[in-house]
Length: 180
Image 1 (cartoon, rainbow, N blue to C red):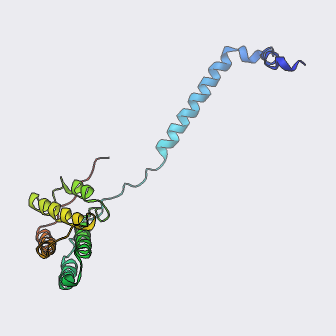
Image 2 (tube, helix red, strand yellow):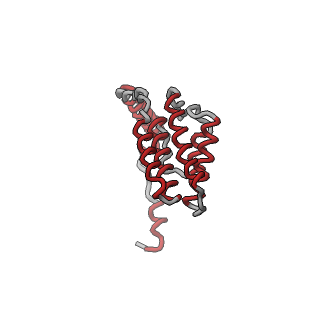
Image 3 (spheres, rainbow, N blue to C red):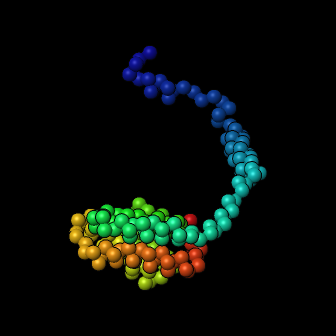
């Protein structure tokens, strides 16, 4: 056998006589169609998974714990730097809003956070504006190392408390479901 003509040797193999019969081709197509039909039939007979039911709306989070944490922070405020205060007050307000409205905002940047709540009905325009100013000042202090006056630091505490009290007084609206 010549090793250079291996491909030519394979092409010279004669086809079996049954392969040239058109009935074999028809039978193969019918068998394939039957297998596909059997697969579709089996898939339709399979029990459908139970549709998850919507979880009942969680009761509104009582603001007492967050207001208590703010009151403790207000007492420690004179001993804290503006940086420490901005971190703690921001964490308290973010944790409250996440618990209250099920926002996933605790570890988001300010831009992501404001984008998340921009079109949500749970917060009105004045609350969103207060949050924007609050978070901007917190970012300037935390990341820009900007000094904050005593009035600005007290304003951070007041804004956080005001937002918590306003949203606690308002009924919690259900979060609209996103379309898949």
